[in-house]
Amino acid sequence: MINARLGATILSWIHPLWNAEAGLYAIQQAAKTGFDLIEILLPVSMDIDAATVGKQLKEYNLEAVCGLNLSKEYHIPFYPKEATALIKAAIDKAAELEADYLGGVLHSAIGVFSGKRRTPAEEAILIDVWGEVADYAATFGITIGIEPINRYESYVCTGAEETLNLIHRVNAPNLKLHLDTFHMNIEEQSFYTPVKMAGSSLKHIHITENDRGLLGEGLVRWDDLFKALNEIDFEGNLVLENFSSSITGMSEAVSLWRPSKYDAQELAEKSLWFMQEKINSFKS
Image 1: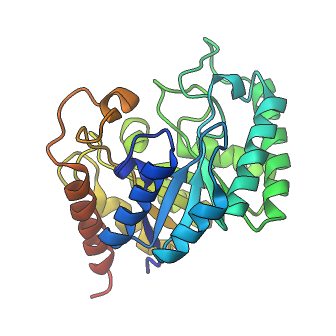
Image 2: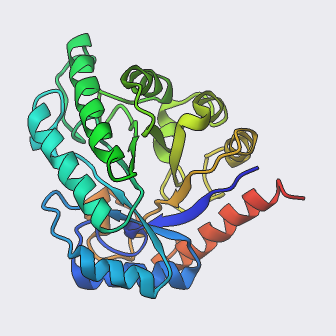
């Protein structure tokens, strides 16, 4: 049985760069649409008034989880100390927001490459950093999720199996796998096998089509994905991460170079309905 929290990232309604007014709008829209939670993408500056946002979340009856993507100054293989400090700062902010999860591209900076494959020395650095931040997060009851991304954006963690192997080497109970169906569509041979392989190590999934459009209108094999989720009794977070060009600045921020078929709210509403229908199909 699938017993997941259904959420959406702030990117369903606003530009990736957080500001107070836009953040409130995203919270309001997530609640209006009927999501259980919202994923707040933390800025590297950590410039979020957690006390105010926390009140807003309670007002709109939403839970929060947090996301973080490393920028080039925090590419773990090159700058492990700086990356460790940033991730710990993000854990502090997540704790202030009463979030129980921090996930994202926490293995490398998006778009930074060494020109070679990941090395054993880089793996050792990753394991050290992940171990330290997982221990720190555990003091707040926070789970850390590592999200593999596609080969055009990273060379460090691009697939579920290799990422799981590194996670298991850390051997921290609160260090988990975070999958994204957009990246899976490029890197995996199946939407079923990686989920089954991960089992209880899978905590969080970004739910999105191969073109970032409406769920069910692209190439993602949703039946395979949800079948696997049902078989592992998934109890994590299923979080919508689709993008619409109707949001000012979104096209440039996420390389969305063709106009979207749907505006942001319609995309969110129809995608939530799709997710609910897939889950409910296993209850009959």
